[in-house]
Amino acid sequence: MSYQSLTIHQAINRLNKKYFLPSLQREFVWDDRQIIRLFDSIMRGYPISSFLFWQPESSTARCWTTYKFLEEIRDGGSHSSIANLNGVNHPVFVLDGQQRLTALNIGLRGFYHAKEKYRWWNNPDAYKATRLHIDLIRKGIGTGADDEDLETHFRFSFTDSPAKTTKKSCWFEVGKILNCKNRDKLYACIRKVQRSLPKSASQDARSSVADTLRTLYEAIFETPTIFYHTETLPDYDRVLDIFVRANEAGTKLTKSDLLLSTMIANWAHEDARKEIHTFVDHLNDHLGRRNDLDKDFVIKASFVLCDLPVKYNITSFTRRNLKVVEQSWPDIKSALERCLNLVNSFGIDRENLSSANALIPVAYYLFNNPGETLLGGSRWESGNANTIRRWLLMALLNGVFGGSSDTMLSALRDVLRSFGKRGRDFPVDKLNKTIAQRGRSADFDDKAMEKLLSLEYGDHNTFLALSLLYDEKAWGNITHHKDHIFPKREFTDTGLRRAGVPKASRERFFEAKDHIANLQLLTDRENTQKRAQEFKVWIRTRSQNFRHKHLIPKSRRLHSLKQFEKFLENRERLIRSRLNRLFA
Image (cartoon, rainbow, N blue to C red; front, side, top):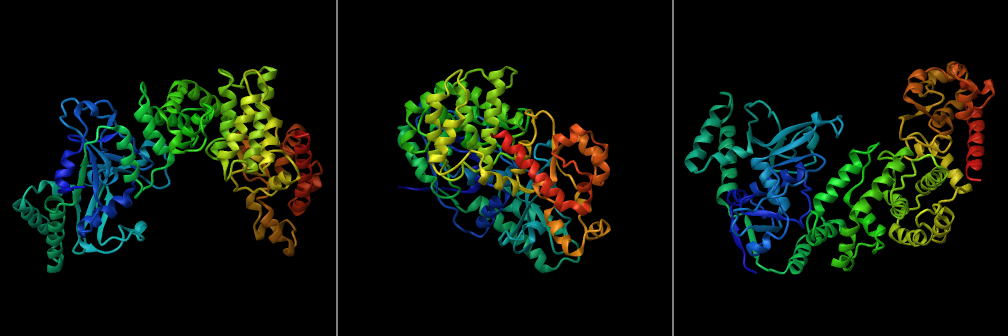
């Protein structure tokens, strides 16, 4: 295999002009630290591995969807845009090296939109456009206080406003080296930067400026860093095999990456990448509640719903199977969206969905009941919605889909295929029997009861468990908060002493404050009204119906903080009674 070489400057000048990304490539997945490590390696003269390109005939190249290299990336992920190859003679596709070339492009010509700390991911104002900078004087490990574990010889940082030049530190925007087209312009740049240093700067500092800029210039313009081999094979299947093998190192391709790549190559009427990414964004951001699903979930669900192999084996990625998925895609999308709308209405979302695979049996049932949402008021809809809600909650609470979930999904699909046809009830008993045969349980039994009663405030399953205690079904329509019945602020040494709690009991009280028996679900309004009032004061303002709804023990004696342990015992009995009636 013969290799040729390029400088970094030559390579990045060909991006989106001659070099493009084939549709089988995954998204850019590197973060700012990986980009910095790459530039540090280049500055130190380290090899950055070889590159693999593919140059098919121009007519073949135009048969596939092609993507541009990114010039801007953002925390949380960025999507490439489609390239237009009109007027491009003999385009070259990058099979191995996308991450490195994109990182070079971002560092030299692009932006990294960094999310500011403590701000929401979905807030567009939370991001600021930063460029890569290098300190021309200081060397050492890290790029700042937050990155001291980043081992680099040169000091790099993505920033929108580099620190002021001092006698010990001089930040330079890395991309500005591209203005130094020759040595004369490099020397002019060095002199300009040196003049910007304080008069008190040492000769060593001035020499460091010159040495670092010279090293950067040579790394970008003179050193042949990009060693590449170009394939000219016309056969796509062989190219796909080369692509998979070439990407076995570095950031691993997931099985869904491989499947998505193959889907892109075989779908005739849709751009699979755009379709799936757009649909995932829709499920996550545009339904009643926020979800946190990914393409792995959508692709796996598509195979299950179409009665195709559940496991991701390359032998399953046949054109016939992918054609089935493409033809069923509108129905798949409909079933998954109806499934998410349904479970969101139960209050299940990104905050408490511990296994996305638990949704797939529900989606399969809806796939076989086209158009049904189970959100209506008929007896059949209401009954099946309640059945699904209880089954799903118990499946999540009992961890039914942990471990080898592919085998479990395949077995449950067999049940649904036989019993879940249109107009039939959700076959909960058959499903639970099949789950039990595989050593797990979605039933409510003594073990499930004890597991539920061991939950505490910080557990992501606590909301799901608490929601079982109420008659409400549409938890997704109104925001509810997990509230401490006896407020947390009372559980201090001072507060417990003031309430008359013996010193020997205070540690037990403190440890029990987050127990599920001291938790309830309140609406925004109710939570605001309650604030941190003493429980014995606040509960007197509540109606008898409210107390019954929240399973509050009737005895006023138990509403005193001193009787907290007795209160927990009594409320736990009420919880047990409620759950036993629910699952009788």
